[in-house]
Image (cartoon, rainbow, N blue to C red; front, side):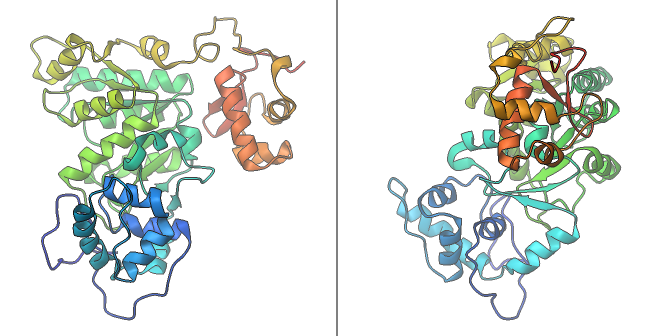
Length: 409
């Protein structure tokens, strides 16, 4: 999919689909397909589109735009704002071929997940009307599972040697404890965090500000390939959508929302990392900052967060886990222990626990099959068991904490 010159100049971060001649595809009523198309029509995080989706549903909104109509503004929305944006959305919708869009996704080895899917990270729903319409994902890991135990590590692109060392060590230490690390795929702190996570054989999640068919920055192309092989690449942009300044800023809300906590390693006073921290504060997530030399402009943003009481000071993995870990799952003693006793588990949870191997890792589908349960039921029980310290995410799936946690007797 390529981008063509629009008839009018787009606003920053807007996606212009290819203007192709030919007949308009027929009506589309499927919610997932409609959401896929809407990612190519509306800016990410547009609250006017979010309000319409809440009121009418994706299929109805998409059909109205394809029919050249303006969806009825929901109560409380400004009709003039909806009408102005709908004019732009209709123009783009007329040039979208849903079949071609989804075919391109399949060719790239990507997949689409939407709200309500088993693999949808439900913590994103806390974004309200700024929730992504859908997410494009490429990689070996299930995004929802990868983010069950995760921390965002962000910071400056032009990072110092001190910053990249700290970010890599933090990410490696978190990975050793089966925590996934989420970051933005940029040079500097982001790259160091991703590489540290991969070195620990843990899940690395990169949230990109462009289509998954593009490597930006290009110098990280090999890193993105490694993340796709052992983690997940994520974007709310369709294939062919190039990066933009607006896209980077709006992307940061997803990084903050996916995780229970964000660590800012290095950041200037005006930086995308501080933007991510602010999103974390708005979502009532834990915000942490690593102190640096008082003479370093790269740490000035971290020091401001600490001085203003907007972040907790952290200097290592133990500090981070203490802030975001769950009692019984991460703050247990060296001998192990869990937040719940096995006898307190319901029958379904015990079946799932019995289906999880002790040493080798098993994927969610394998656990569900062994427990004779549906995928949703298995997912729910695995989340409970992970929170209670019975199971953990390994390099390629789930395993019990036998030897550090409860036995099966």
